[in-house]
Length: 85
Image 1 (cartoon, rainbow, N blue to C red):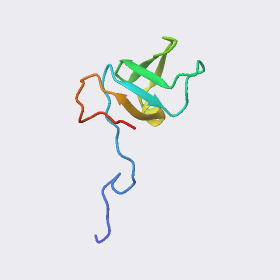
Image 2 (cartoon, rainbow, N blue to C red):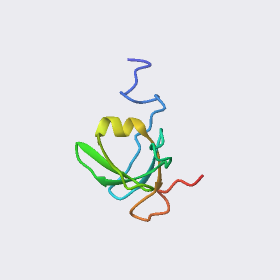
Image 3 (cartoon, rainbow, N blue to C red):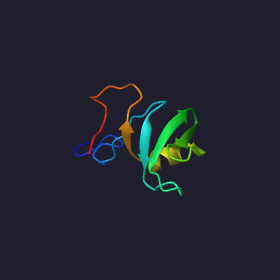
Image 4 (tube, helix red, strand yellow):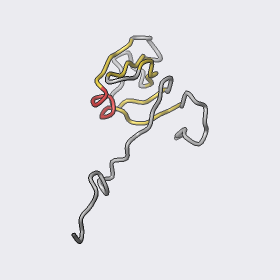
């Protein structure tokens, strides 16, 4: 059909890639005031730890992906994947 699109194509939503050990920025800051979280467990649920106060939070993957703003530092250390602002 003319004008048909693949699912997810053209929505402007790019799937963010992240891995174990990455430091990420969430949309909302932690109550302690920090906005940096480290990924310490991955699976169906993702456990993140606040870099400032070391408190850990377990989130379902879907909620984590929705709340993720950007990856600040990649655990792999590959500079091509890091985003600097």
